[in-house]
Image 1 (cartoon, rainbow, N blue to C red):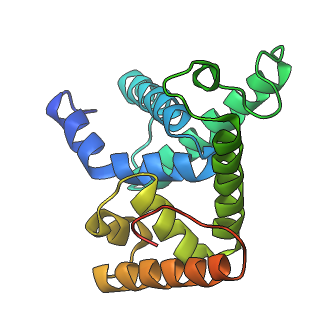
Image 2: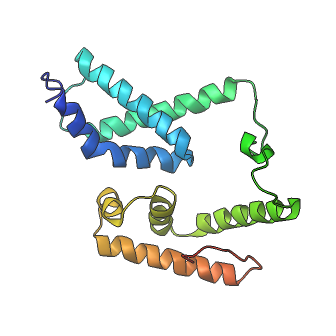
Amino acid sequence: MYVGGQESGLETLLNRYKSKIYTSIYMKVKDEYLAEDIFQETFIKIINTLKSGKYNEEGKFLPWAIRIAHNMIVDFFRKAKRAPNIVNADGFDIFEVLEFSEESAESKMLKKQVDVDLKKMIQKLPDDQKEVLIMRHFCDMSFKDIAEITEVSINTALGRMRYALSNLRKMIEGTDLTLQMGYL
């Protein structure tokens, strides 16, 4: 529709594929803001390609769009590798310097260590459980969207989440890690 001149076709494309494309980007870059930027750049490239008439209709829009997103990710990391390092190896963030509360240095270090430990534990989960957990808690996706993207039923997505949380609980019980998270 969009290639045929109907501007509403772009909205249809966005609504139909945005969550799948965004999630594929997020799963690779693991940063919400970076994923949003790359998603926008991906759709700009898609729009430009469609407007220029270079897209050949093969009925495989989603794989084509995800391939563009993948190339944009590769380009980003190539540019970042060549750019001078402004951030330190820990991923220095300006908000870590600003004092928003009177949190002690000890509690900051403890929170940071808990975050690191939790990320390591999440990485140990089976891929299907890890994927659902990340989509639900870090991408704020509904189970309906998760089910569509992973091409499983909602009950399967819910089951994977239950097993992921159960496995995390078991890993946490085996360590000194104490989390203040309501869902674990």
